[in-house]
Length: 171
Picture 1 (spheres, rainbow, N blue to C red):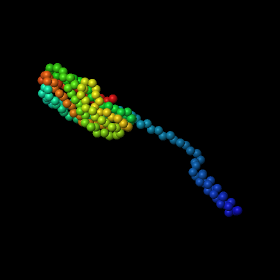
Picture 2 (tube, rainbow, N blue to C red):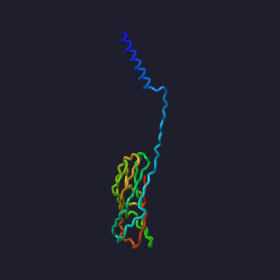
Picture 3 (cartoon, rainbow, N blue to C red):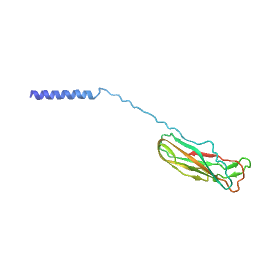
Picture 4 (cartoon, helix red, strand yellow):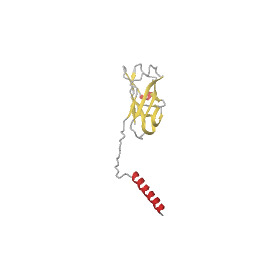
């Protein structure tokens, strides 16, 4: 009986020792917080595009260069890149060629981050048209593409240098 009592006492003392080592006498919690800030959704495009020289009733096309969307909003909101264009106005004659004479053809976007970006060629650029659509956006991402701008000179176009403004925007 003495050996059973000793064994019981040793087990009880061991349990008490383990219990006292596992549980602190006091505890204090620290709640750590961090704020992830949202950035901006921006687009950059070449400042100038020289389409070259074209005869009346002819088509000309030129590469615009790289267009880049940077989405640093750290969110899940999709975006659409759009283009619109003013009418072409002659420098000397002040005659107008409608923006409908132009076609914007975006290339496939090179993407970073999480999104799926799909291109869409557009004509009739007098009103804003979507040329790249990003879906499935999650966190920060970028998309860059090259685009071509085509112009068809009307058969009755007067000889002149015509200028228009192509605007890239985001929704």
